[in-house]
Length: 258
Image 1 (cartoon, helix red, strand yellow):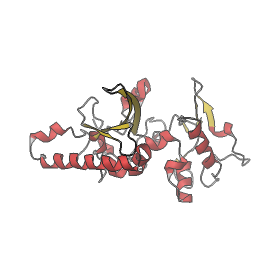
Image 2 (cartoon, one colour):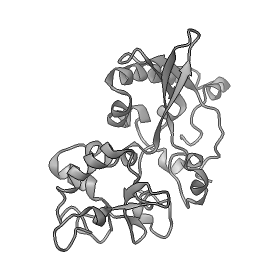
Image 3 (spheres, one colour):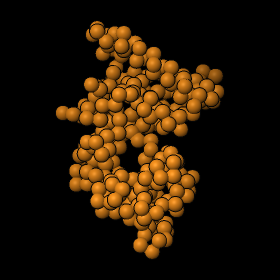
Image 4 (tube, one colour):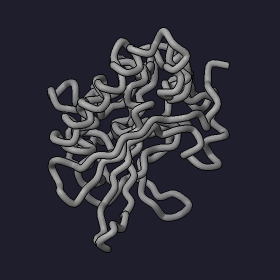
């Protein structure tokens, strides 16, 4: 099976955020030093086999908050017919064209023909993929700015939790880990294919903490990222030093890696 079973050991590190004295970073070294990479257009089968070209964009993107939706709207208004296959025929990009609500009244991008409204098909002149990604490339901007938060973060997961210290003070713990299939809840079990724990997607020449640098900096800030690199590098060095011994498995490498 290309996809490894979940529940394997992971190596973690916790360190104070150099950019915020009231914050602690908790990072999954197993995930961050793994060789996962997005293989969309290079072997990605999609989470729904009925629309493989949609990749993981079959359910639409839920907005993190009002600010997320507002930011995305500014970019949507800059889309052209050359960027977006489903650009409105009348040229007017109204909210109802690209926003809908789910069963719990949460706002998200619309789903059209089994995929996010911004998902261009393989028949589109610019090829299959996200119109907001096409826009970012055309304007020389980062897709981190143009896409909804959930789109550029996956399959990195950021969680927040409060921890009480011995002095009774609360400290915010920011966890960075792999967004596994199980974390999607019951719906995740229905995915026909999923990449983060799949050997087919663990083919990058660089570890996640290097290849996903822009995303990680956006998630935890530049100072915390620099500290994270230090710990990831040390973990890789320790793994390499023990690679010729059975002890290397005790450092919890990702089982989907080569």
